[in-house]
Image (cartoon, rainbow, N blue to C red; front, side, top):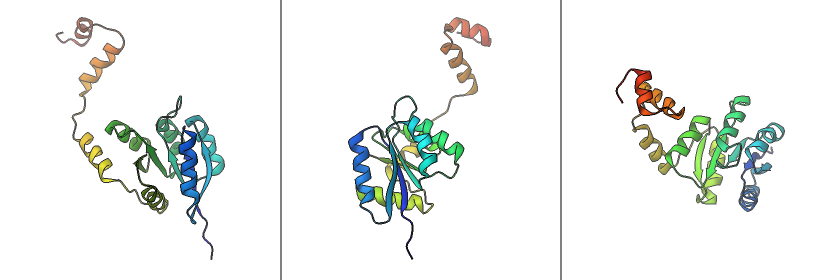
Length: 174
């Protein structure tokens, strides 16, 4: 009995990285790249046409970011399995990707053997998280969040109001 290969889509704005990913994936007997593109705008319709099992998605893709593309794809297909593959390791990037619906997050300096292992795990329904990513998420979760009042103040400041005007509008001192 022959099993169908894991169908992988690559979304990466750097051609050489995209081609390298395809080479790594296509060397595996149980995997096949079924689509590749360079922008978030291209990723959304490509996902519909190639119906991958797993998608590798960069975050920084131009007008439509990887996070925006993840949200759009997951809105249409809540079961989409998306691995963020990026060079950015900031905790906010990781958090936004997970909030958008990414299955997991890998850095571009990940070994190719780990990338292949994670693709297989995600295809199997797992949500593997590397220890360094888990540490960053835990660190961010422990950070204090803004109060509703602080959000109000920031919204008024973003509208161009001065401190004195914000204070008067909210009935608080400057």
